[in-house]
Each structure stands twice: as structure tokens, then as C-alpha cells.
Image 1 (cartoon, rainbow, N blue to C red):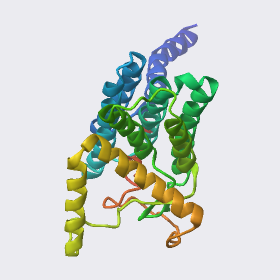
Image 2: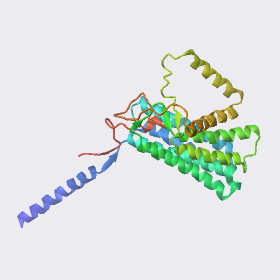
Image 3: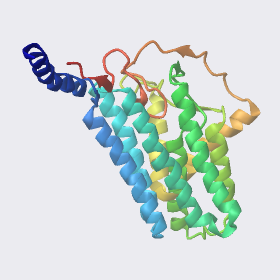
Image 4: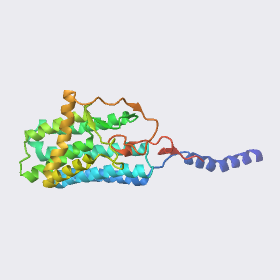
Length: 294
């Protein structure tokens, strides 16, 4: 009886230790806080744009999308500067981009201009959001293919920027957006070019930290002058011209062919990886989901 009692007491003493060990073996999350907080601000302004569009504050919604684009740019820069790129950040960034640059502009287009078209209007808005999601998903599965100087298809933040700038341009010019066939056509074109294979210059091959020919400065000055004349209208013209030029060149098969893609062997801190530098994955130094070992 004494032997059985001692074994029972020993098992009872070991039970809490085994339970504690099982608890510590549960997988834990370790993420980089700063870049992901900035990414969260991207989604915050995207959600704010949705709320303001529902409340018919269309100008406010357009500016909220612009603010989301600013934070979408900042999170990648911060992640690169602090060397805090991760797989979690890449996936989280894409989800936030879908809200801010897919759902928010699509809903804004429908409530602001396309609602009088009925079913055709909300289907066009859905097409914009769906093609934006496909654009992000395609980029994620092709993240290992590096094409430094070009985007494949129109980036979704640029498409959202065209929508936001169109709201500002129509308001500045005093045009009526409701039941506008121009905006309906624009929505479908933007959806198409996002999922197309047309090449769009990313300008990442231009290193502004190095010496460049003098005419680059002249071109920059001309762009600033044109935008300053009437910012609300000229930004829309420049953004839409960028999208339309890539589409025309792609349909007519003009321009130089895309460079041969090659597999990325690691993370280049001086090089973008697509829509956002925050989408680069650091496979050597960081993983967000790691089990906590005892």
C-alpha cells in the first residue's frame, strides 16, 4: 500500500509540471509592432472612407483613401529601414490593401456615381473590388519573381488613387457624377488593367540618390508645374494617363519586352518587391509564428 501511495503522490506531483510544459509548447506569435501599426492605419483610413461614403461625405472619403495610400507607402519604408520585414507583415498588408484600395473605392464609386445604373452599377463596383483582390493574390504567389523596373498589371493603390482623384476632379469642375457613363467605363477599365499582364513602369530602377542626367530635373519641374495649376484635376489626369498609357501600349504590344524574370534568393533591402516593400519576406532572420520552447 505504501508503494502504491508513493507512486500516486509522485504522479500527482508530476502532473502540474506536465501541464505547464504543454502550455509552454503552444505556438506563440512574435511580430514587428511598428510597421504593422502603420499598416493598421492604412486599414483604418480605408474603413473610414467606407463610413464616409455611406454617409455621403464623398470628398472626405476620397481624402481618406489618399491618407491610406500614404500609410501604405510608409509601412514598407519603415519595415525596410528597421529590417523588420516578415511573412506576417506581407499577408497583413495585402488584407489591409484589399479593404482600403479594393472595397472602399468600389463602394465609393457605387454610392457616388454608379447607383442609378442599378444592377450594372453595383456589379461594376464589385468587379473593381474583385479584380483588386485577384491582383493582390497574384502578386503574393509571384513574390519570388523579381521584375525590378515593371509592375505586372496596374497596382491596386494606383487604381484606388484614380478613383479618389476622380471624386476631387468632378467636384472641382462642377460635373455631375450620377449616372456618368464615363465613370462606369472607367471602373471597368481599371478592373481590367489590374488583372492584365500589361507592363507598367515602377520607376524603381531610377536611383534618385545618384547623379542623373539634367533633363530628369527638368521633367520633375514640369510635372510639379502642371499639378500646381489645378491639383484636383491634374492629379486625376496624370494618374488616369498612367493607367491608360500602359493599357494602350499593352494592347498594341508597343515598347520593350519585359526583362527575363529570375527567382529572388533573399530580401534586398534596397529594392521594392511589388505594390509595397512591406510585402517582402525575410526568410533567414524572422518568422512571426514560432513555438515557444520550454
